[in-house]
Amino acid sequence: MSPIPDEPVPVEVGSVAPDFELFTHDSERWKLSDHRDQPVVLLFFPGAFTSVCTTELNTVNNTLDEFGEAEVVGISTDSPFVLEEFRSVENLTFPLLSDHNGKVSEMYGAKYDANFTPMNLDRISKRAAFVVDGKGILRYREVLDNAGNQPDFDQIREVLNQLSA
Image 1: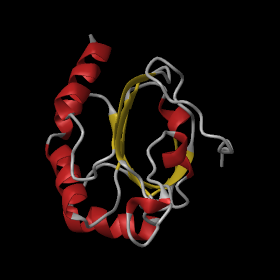
Image 2: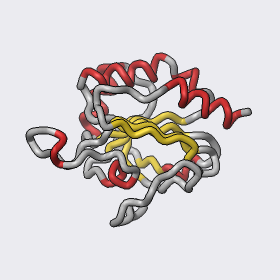
Image 3: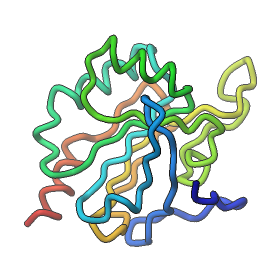
């Protein structure tokens, strides 16, 4: 697997998106740089089987054709086994990636601090959306502190439409 930097890399629109490799819901390796021939939408979410995450991912799944040629992936700190069950139960058709140790979420500035819950969990992804173009450049960034909010899918689709124009 590709090494993940010890220090978070500033992720800003216009910069090169940090490369990473994670395991999918079915324990296959998925590497961002392997998708340089098409836009990629990275959707970080706090946890499988929670109400807002379920709504978000079903919304994406039901409108997947509106994302054009983009590769859409969901990323959470759930294990691949939980993600496989979640994907199966919800009939999701796009890959879910396990960032089980939270390193990629942290790298993208999309990880809650330990004070997010009373349990002091320190590896929960924030709800966030990133669009990476076919050359690996970050074209959209949205990190939400409130887990009850959803990404601006209209804006994401607008960015994807601009990339295909």
